[in-house]
Image 1: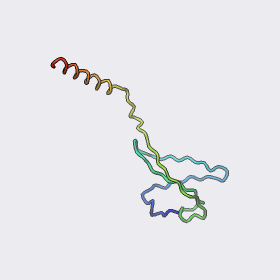
Image 2: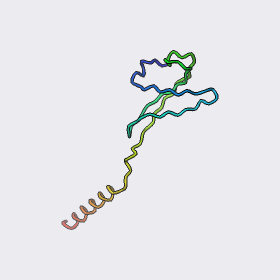
Image 3: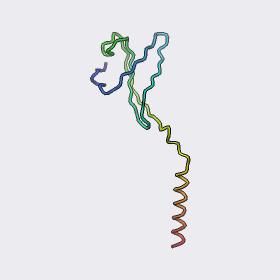
Image 4: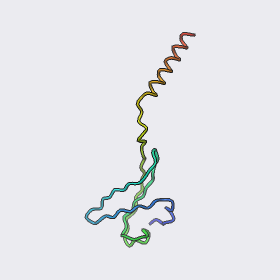
Length: 95
């Protein structure tokens, strides 16, 4: 069992499930290109999860966010290729 003090800097989110349907989905605001570490534990409903009457083992993992506006159109690659080719031609011409 974990202690509340262990995760003081974590944000606690809750989703209510039933015995018939234990699935859930959570969303949160995030920054681009970040890795977020998460932990999940099922408990009976209690304001303090460490005092819940019933609880499951907790699992942990991480998820990475993407950069939505980082699409490359290839212009930078073409431009750098043209500069490199120009330098090669320039070097051969003056060699």
